[in-house]
Image (cartoon, rainbow, N blue to C red; front, side, top):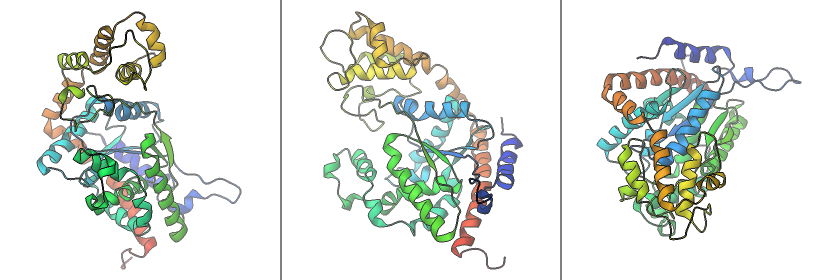
Length: 381
């Protein structure tokens, strides 16, 4: 099913009627507060088949936003391929991962009729705005960002202490500026992020303020929407986060795993030799990780501590079995829906095309304004 004309028409109405197009419309009178339309933007890297940590930390919070936000608030979700290539990628694998991620998002419930779902790299204004914002951002600020070291360390399977600037490439250093461009291109006012991304959003705010001071009111200053993040740990090594890069497939659960794989991976999860079930992330990280997963998927929103009470005299084998069943039930139907979407290649490409056109309408208006302000507008206008 293709998107109807409603979303793009809705986007156009936002552009022409809400004040996004002309920054002066943000201002009313000297005694009134600026009127800034709400816009929400989020991005996700194409990392292959999402694992349980991605699902709990990224997918579920976004789906909650999609359900709860009033329909008049634009909602953008971008699969950010330009961010992915800041670290080495195999081209064929990346092409597949991009499509797989979009299919995964829809299989989990992202609705392209409500959410503008698109590939970042198909809207060239992202890179164009990033270049302009690069000219306003000091290298010192970027070098002080903490995430580039962790990204390299994860990629080369080393500790951050062993990462040096000789491992760093310009694209990865400037990654936060591209992230700022992603947000500001749609004049987003709210950005849902985990606590580990707050430093990047603070940089985005600073860049927006610098641009507005230099060229006049243009970008609203986005607000951080902290997403309560569930840190899901490696099932075989609970000192590490669950990750696709781990060489041991027993260390993780993906959203496409069949029930027997989920149950067997939970059965093999590393816990400890202590009796009973308690929640103690420091002393019992493996057991606590299982309780965290159960809590994140619990329809009654019970805390891990509350779930311990339900366990009663359970042994760890019973806990693993029950958490496995909870995961199987929560992911039920996702694999089948993913396979249906992924096999309908024309449908997936149609959604990507509609998202590109929808996002592109907004992006072109923003870039026209930005280029005029910095002196790069068309000379024949």
